[in-house]
Image (cartoon, rainbow, N blue to C red; front, top):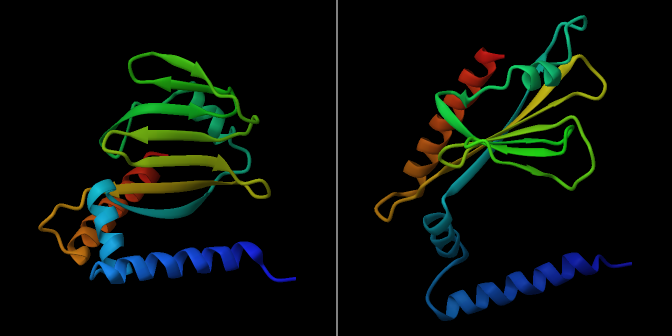
Amino acid sequence: MWDKDGLSALVAFAQLTAELHAKGLTIWDQLEAIYREHGLYINAQRSIALDPTAAPIGDTLRHQPPTEIAGLPIVCTEDYKQSLRTFSDGTVEGIELPVSDVLIYHLQGGARVIVRPSGTEPKIKCYYEVVEPMLHEDTMIHAQQRAQEAMDMLIEKHQQSL
């Protein structure tokens, strides 16, 4: 059986390519336009080994919640174990998703840090997302370098704080 979704995606991509070509643009031009409008997003993942006799890291983070990560204020914390979304102004709302031992920190400027325990080992998994504005005069390489520098700093400072 053919992969219908894959074929549909291929047709949509070919159509987009043809439409852009008719305007004298490329797929790369369109991607850059999206980055300039919405920012350049990059992601990374790190695992940190923990002392197997230590209290679960999620419990520690819930009892002593951080207010900032890497010098960036936390504007919202999503706690999927407690099904709560807490904003920095104290507003709290429910989350209607399955319960899971996951914490998501939304930082000022658009970055996110997601923390969850490993299901099989005494370690935590940290997922990082950085959004870097791409100004009109920026080159893609320059924006990528800034985004990577921001990511490296976020990871280093976050892991030092754990």
